[in-house]
Amino acid sequence: MIRATTLALAILTAAPALAQEEAPVEEAPLREGPGAIDPSLNIDLMSDFRFRGVSRSDEDPSGRVGLTVYHESGLYAGTRATTLRGIDPYRGRDLGDLQTDLFLGYSRQLGGGFSMDGGLLYSVFAGDGRGADDYVEPYASLSYLIGPATFTAGAHYAPDQDALGGGDMLYLYSRVDVTVPFRPWAFSAELGRQDSTAFGDYWNWSLGVTHHLQLEGVPVNEIGLRYVDTDLPSGPGRDAGLVVTVNIGF
Image 1 (tube, rainbow, N blue to C red):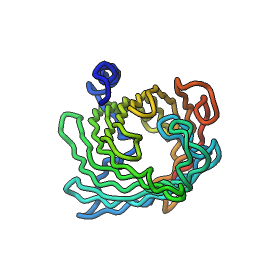
Image 2: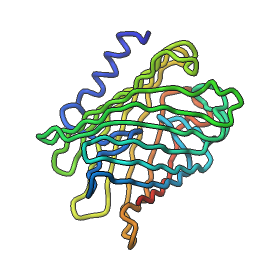
Image 3: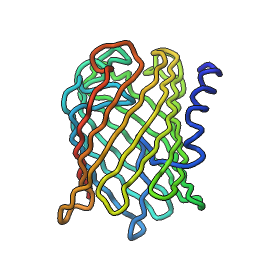
Image 4: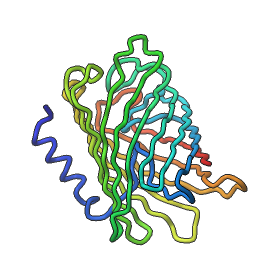
């Protein structure tokens, strides 16, 4: 079981975000559709697929396709597939060629600027030759919107499973997103703590900027630049790096 002192430290780190809010990191964003059911398709092109600060694409380009269906009640479900390459520098093994995430969740506005999001995430890895890397991870987050800024604190907790090497795993994070009023720019900063019984503990952080492009017929079209780093020992896939992302959504 994860040490109580580590849990307390991570929670204290996320505490300032609880006083305000932010958008979830890995899970589906809060969305209000025009009807009872609202599907959303997203395509991401990335210069490097960084998962909690660590490269899962051998610092090479990666692509992602995701489909999410939202219901006006706040329920949502979806899937996303992301290409992988090389050795995961945190787990120390090849996770295969494709990571497919299946998720089911619920999000809603709580009033007073607060909103919540929570659900269940199931990650499946194809092409690893073992089939023992798949795992289930519940998640939850609380956000607070004030002016152009959104503050978020969230957690992903994976109980003991074969894929986790005989122990549980916890990821806590806090994040702030700020949009520039009447301008197509947005800025973000994130701090996270990965805590694993089998694979060890580390901090990761990032700073990012995105620019919204106006394209006819494409409601979501952004290009972003993000600086990512961790406190893991220096090595390929876990050193500081810049990640360029292009996102197209319908």
